[in-house]
Structure formats: structure tokens, C-alpha cells
Image (cartoon, rainbow, N blue to C red; front, side, top):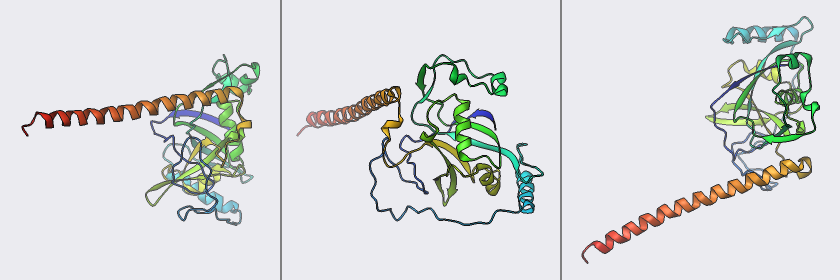
Length: 265
């Protein structure tokens, strides 16, 4: 699996919820415990049993895919029935990630020789990855979601547990943007093949692997300290927003009061 990078100017809400089924609802940074009863607007994942496509069917789908791919990023079929191609993954991580401290960026030599720079030091630091960065991956039809996540973390030298992250597929349906969490055994390139090359039809997003409860034991002490710092900053920002709101409201009321007092009774 090879990686290429580019940047997008997209915006990701900090209140975006993560679920195992399609959703459009919003929630807070640390989610509250949810009711055991599902909303009527939330659908349960449907178990689908489909037979594996034949080699001829795969060839036809790849030919159709390549005729619609305009960026020279077509798929290639091998004699053994496997195929390779490209997917793009949007990184929408709201929390800082842990990386080795004082490590130089990975060079082409390191990538070719598969050098693990993270193993050269025990020092750790945390920082935010660029919002909505996009990584282009060259993968195989046998590459799983788990391997895609591990490859992305390795590219950024992130030493956090891969289980803290999840890959989602994003689709547009009835004018809404919907997300679905993928199983670690799913194969993204096959999903890309079925959907075609249009990223408006299907795209992939890496997010934190949210569950109903926060598993604090999975985080290191520096990460927990960073969370406290983040919450304190958000608290101060909220306080300032509320103060500005009511200061402006008070100013308007005082102006209205002065105008009414200046008018003859």
C-alpha cells in the first residue's frame, strides 16, 4: 500500500456523531449515554448475503470503472483475480494524536526501506492533524479496513492504538450526507469499484472510533492531560461567547432606555 497526500478546504463539525448505522444526528464532544430505544429515523444495519463476483464480472466492472475515471487512477486486474487501485481517505480527527517527539519527517528512503522511525525514540508528544486532510492510497482488493487504518497511522507516525480509529464510508442520499462505519474486515477497494470513481457518490473518512462510552483506560496520561486542556479552552471560549452575547444585548437595551427617556412624555 502506497500513500500520496493532498489538502482539502472542507469543514467538519466538532459535534459530528459516529454510529454503526446511517445517521445524520448531532451530539457533543463526549457523547451522552444514548437511549436503548432506536429513533425511527435511525436504521439498523441490514445483513446482506451476496455471492462473490465471478472473475468475468470483476473484469467488466473494472473496465466500466476505468472508462469513467478521468484522473489516470484506474484499477488493474491481475491474473489471479485480484486487482489494485486508488482510494482517497479524508481525515476528520477531532482529538490530538500521539507521535514520537523530535523525529524528522519520513523520507523517500525511509518509505522504500520500510524504516520505522517511531521505534527510534521513547519520547512522545501530541498534536492535531490538519483538518480534513486527504490521503490517497494505492491498495489491493485484498486490503482490509484494518490495514488501511494501520497504513494511515504509520504514514503520520501515529503511535496510538489503531482500535481508537474507524473508517467510515460517506454517501449522499436524498439530499443528505450519511456516514456508515465499516467493519475492520471490509475491503474498501471493492466498495470503490461498486460505487464507481465519483467521490460524490462514495468517499472514505477516518474518524475516532466512538462507542457508547469513553474507554479512558485506552488513553495515555499525556492524552488525558491534552483532553483536559482542550476542555478548558472550549469552556473559556463558550464563556466569552455568552458574555459577548449578553453584553451586546445589554448595550441595545441601554440604548433603547436612553432613547425612551429622552423623548417628551
